[in-house]
Image 1 (cartoon, rainbow, N blue to C red):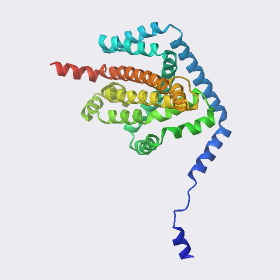
Image 2 (image 1 turned 180 degrees about the horizontal axis):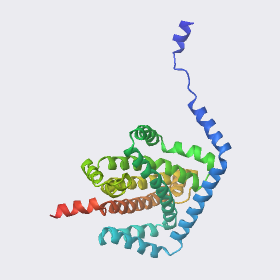
Image 3 (image 1 turned 90 degrees about the horizontal axis):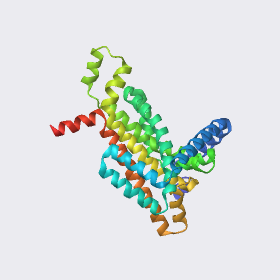
Image 4 (image 1 turned 180 degrees about the vertical axis):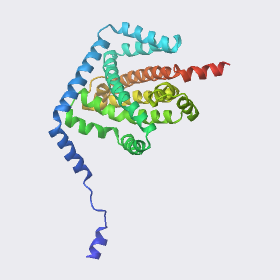
Length: 296
């Protein structure tokens, strides 16, 4: 017997994690299916509304609006860059697809921020919560992106909704981590000064900690949006419309030119969103103080 075991090689007994997860997915689908139906209805309705708004005006009107927004937040140089970038996207015939992708990023980003910031604040203010949330974020951040698509397809079939739900889950960790980091890095003397003046925990959070942590929080939101964009592109594999589906179609049919055009449109959209969210961080009270300190 011993010789047989040694000959075959000894292995750790199999742990059926995949079967357990499969059973959990089936249990959730069988017991809270109406919840998933409600989520699907809400997400699909929001997506149709935002996509309709973005695609309703002619592309040149949206181009002007993007340029004006860029001018307001970053100045005329960025506005010119936005005109050139989105003009290129329009000339490639990818503007409608870019708006579909942008609508998905907006929905996924908003939901992810609404979840990530409060969770990050909770982790910063409660050590027990932090010890629970950190390994969960580690797991979510290291899990391959494609794995998120498998269970959501089971819950929502194919289309944009499973892609958006997977995108929300995929993009959460950096928002939670950077919000927690920003709150923890607030000078304790500032918090103690607030306590000395009789401020409540709520006022200390909203009037001291969050404003001082805003650059870090905005960096987290920036990462949420960037990860949302990357995941939305991957979601083209499960039928999500937009640039992701065009990239996926080009890959599966080996259309190099079409894939390059869609890829360029993704890059333009990514650069524009990245610079815009970075500008919001620079406009915070801490950002303005740093700029004034450099000038003085």
